[in-house]
Length: 266
Image (cartoon, rainbow, N blue to C red; front, side):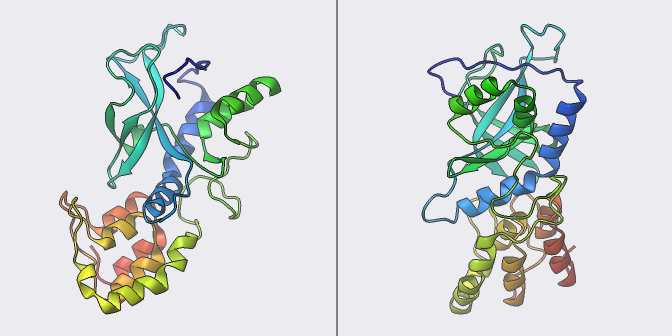
């Protein structure tokens, strides 16, 4: 991902059924990624080594017929943000072929346009569906070279890890994801702070979001429950017109959705 040298480029056919399934799994499990990024922003000491998403870029109409010089390049974005509709970030790669973008450019895509995501904690990678598909097709020495180039532990390419120290899941959605440890551990302090300062319930950040919006999108059932108990508006609207219910539904946070509906969210 560095500008200092060209790493080996792996090309894949868009019609490859395995790659299509890897992309589908990445898109439907994006909540795992976003939840981790959302809680990272609340940590005093950073916990993530990296967090990035992959997306296709081209100079115009896609044409992958010439495999030696494809018009679509899959590249990684860092500094990722998500507003319930669009994923945005900064391009980390220098393109090999595409001329219309460069490393450092900002990009904004709909969730169904991203093709992969991954984050790393203590050098261990979570996600990376398309990467692991390609790794599964490499010879052992190629896979080792690939992992050394990244300086990360991608693990078994046939067993994609989604979250640390939690039961293995199918990776096909967020409905059965256990509550994030930080969501549970911070619940008592959140209740205490709200007891002391109810203005937190209505305070908005520079995007026009209340705390309810952030926690709903992060899938924090514990946090949303406390906010509702303390009188937060379940129908509060962001500056761009999103409600907590819409945000929770965008990533399939069913427990949060149920809590909001029980308090009159629409």
